[in-house]
Every structure is written in C-alpha cells, then in structure tokens.
Image (cartoon, rainbow over all chains, first blue to last red; front, side, top):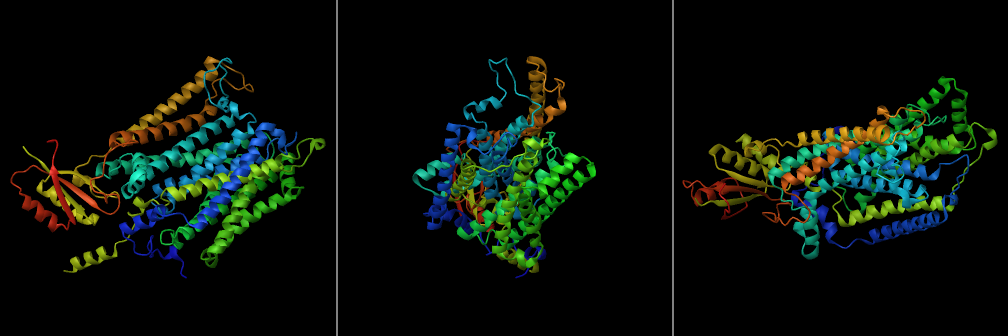
Length: 460
Length: 176
C-alpha cells in the first residue's frame, strides 16, 4: 500500500461520496438501534463508572485518609489524574482551532469527535480537584464572591486559582465552539426526524435554516473562536504546569515546564484521538471518512510531538547537571535510578521510544501497530505525570522523612471510574449526535462528474 | 405593488452560483440563498457586507481584560489587602493569567451571542427550513419578483436554463 499523504493525490474522503450519501452515512446510524458492540462497550464503561462512584462516595464519606498519601507525599494519584485528563483534553481544540487557522482540511473528518473528547476529558479532569478538596460541598470557595469572612477574597497570586479560571474558560469556550459547529448538523437531524425527536432537535438546532447571511456570519464566528481558542489551548496547560513550576521543589522548579507540558498535552491528546478514531471508524463504518490519510497525518503529529517531549526530558536532565545544584542533581538521579526508577523507564519507553517506530512506513500503514503505539503513549503520559509528582516528593531534603507511595483501592477505583465516565459520555455522544461534521465534510468532497462536465464545456 | 417570491432548488451549488451571477447582472433582486454548507463566492453576488463580528470580539475581549485587572486590583489592594508572602498588593504580573483567561472568555461568549442574536438563532425557535432537504443536499435560491416587465414564463425559463430541479413560488408578505 502506498503512503497516502506523501502523494497528495488521494482525495480526503474516499468512495466518491455525494452530499446525500454523506448525510445518509453520518446520520443513518443514529436512526437505527445500536449494535451489540455498542451495548457491550456501554456496559463495560458504565460498570467502570460505577466503580468510580463507589470509590468517590466512600472517600467523601470517610475522608482523604482513605488514600495512600503520607506526610512526605501529600500529592499523588489525584493530581496525576487531573493533569493526565487535562492533557487529553488538549487535542480536540488544537485540531478544531489551530488546524482551522492553518486551513488543514483533513481536520473535518475528526474535529467533531475530537472536540467532544476534549469536553469529556475536561469534565473528568475537573472532577479531581473537586474530589481532592476533601470537603467538596465547599467547592464554591474557589470563586471570588462577596462573603462574610471579611470579605476575604481568593489569592490571585496562586497558580491553583489560575487553574480555576483557565480550566473554566477552556471548558466554556470548547463547549461553545463545539456546539456552534453542531448546530447545522442538528438541523439536519431535525429535518430527518419525526415526532418527539423532531421537537427535541428542533429545540436544539436554534431554528437553523442555512441562510447565506447566517453562513457568512457563521464562518467568521468560527474563525474568531478558533483564533481565541488557539492561545487558550497554549495557556491552559502552561497554567497547569505553574502548579508545579512556581514551587521551590527540585524536579518541579523549572522554567521549561510550560512548553514541556503543552507539547506533552498535545502528544497525549492526539494519541487518545487516534485510539478512539481507530475504534470508531471500524465500529461505525467510517473508513471512507477517516482514511489512511487522516491516520497518517495524526501519526506524523505524534512522532513530531513525541520527539519534542523527548527533547524536553533531555533538557531537564541537562539543566539538572549544568545547574551545579546538588539538590537538583539528586532529584533527577533519584528519579531515574532510585526506588521508583521503573516508572521513569516506563515513561521514556512509552513516550520517547515507542512513537519513533512511526517513522517507518510499514508501521504507519498497520492499524494494529498504530493502535498499540497510541495505547503505549497514553500509558506513558499518565506515568509522566506520576513521575514528575511522586518521584520529586518521596525523597525530600531530610532523609529521615523519606517514604514510598502505594495507591489504595480507593485511588485506583477513582482512576478506573474516570475512564468509565469518559467512555460512557463518549459512547452516548456516538449514539445520539453525529460523530462527523457532515456540513463541513460536504465542503471538501470531490465532484468528479462535475469536473468532467466542466472539462467538456471548456473543450467545446 | 404585488410581490411574489420565486423559489428554485438546485442539486449543485455551482448551478446556483451561475444563476445568482445572472441575477446580479440583470438586476433581479435576490431575497436569500439557503444551502447545506457555505457556498464560497456567493457573498459579493448577494451584496452581503462583511460582518462586524470581529469588532464585537475585540471590544468584549478588551472589556474582559480591563474588568479582570480592575477586579483583581480592587480585591487584593483595596477592598481587603492581605499580605501574601510579602508580595506587593498590586501584583500585576501575577494577575496576568486570570486577566488573559477572562479576555478569551468574554471575547468568545460575546462572539457566540452576537452570532445568535444577529442570525435569529435561539433555542426553541420555530423557524422552518424553506425546503426539507436544504440541510441535506439541496440549494435554494429565493428571488423577489417585483419587476412587472418580467413574466412567470421568464422565471420558468430562467430556472430551466440554470438546471433547477424544483421550483415553486408564494406571495410575498412584505414589500421591501
């Protein structure tokens, strides 16, 4: 099989689709009953979600003492999961915003589901700070509201507060951007449906009629939102990285953190998008829409960002050595060769070495191999956060307080539950909303008959 | 003067573009065009002006920025000054991240609301599409028939010439 993207000849959407066929392919599955595969996946995801609900309920009723934290390691699983999910949530907006500004037309096949993935991942991420507050019923204390304690305002100099605003804005803008993109397709759903479904989608589609005046404004609005979302994406994980970088702890106190976190987030997000797309194109029969060309393009992004992540790891090591600070040097020595060195090994193996195989055309054309690599990247990126957080903490300045860390069943149950929530939401999305932006796909279709007619007319 | 709306549905967006071009050349007033996706090159033919949306975004973003800086300054240096690690009360560099996020939030929400307000999009709107397949694969051109020198037959031949697959008409409510 030839490499698709290099030739630049193959169409974005294969199978010579007409607009009517696109409508039938994208909206058809929503009219039918889901397959047994969907039910099986949903059952699995919902079960994982229940595990999470049980763990979190037990933890909130009992207290944070149910976790494996100790006096040396005050931050471990919860914040690892938080950073992991925020990172996953970066690819969607990157695909929809940055690639829109760069006029990368291949994004149209994947942007809808990538944006949905972003929203669900940010929901998962947002739950963790809520859970690790210990007293989630006081969660509104993070907002600056007039109160009877002074009024005592929030501390604007704290990166944790910046997080509240960054994640809140990111979630809101991603949701708005996603929904605006969804409106024309919701109108298609409305016009295909009858009875109650027609009423529901009529309500949700805002009375969309496809007028040229609306389209003209709509396209400008999408560009503007993309232009706003692009720096937003960069800011969100930069702000998350300052949770660590503004601390004085060796291993955290690094200026390379913001770009290092952002590129890692894009890397892990793309890996998750590719994991989901490989499953979705098979289950939903979207092989003509998510083609080898799209998969190849995403593989290239993964190799590129994975290599930058490798560079960031090397930069950290170089800085530790070059700084001459013995504490900094100890932190990294301990990270690589200490009792938790195995986690550093997993991180480098999965994030730096595994994606390098995507340079090979044979690997890029093999779906099972790509699938395995994306799974490895997901695992590796989870471990990256674990390594940064736990190995920097567990051996501090006083050897008498050195400890180790083991997660309890509550923490593992919460992690499982977050995956359950993510996949439950994603499966519901596949079931009830169009997974592919049909209105946008119709703009990138090829018209072989029409082009032939034009050629005839020119010849005559 | 009586006015009728003449509708022509096309199966190909390029046929509609040709028809719209002829309308512009002959001065036949076009009411609107309805399509399943944006047709590029249509806006100048319909005489649509560029939207003022970018201006709205700019003003809203600037408002968010100013409001965020002012509020952070007011709360931490004026209303209840609190010494945090010996840092100055007006720590403007530290106020930047929140100010940046609010710039984006205000700009983005204003863009979305302005789009909805100007296009009459709102949840629960009862507006019906002109043709049930206009969100699928039909492109509808709507002409205002006011010129008495043009007959029904002129319109029929116009639609036929440009390959309209379906035509209909209705009495115009207003006389713009």
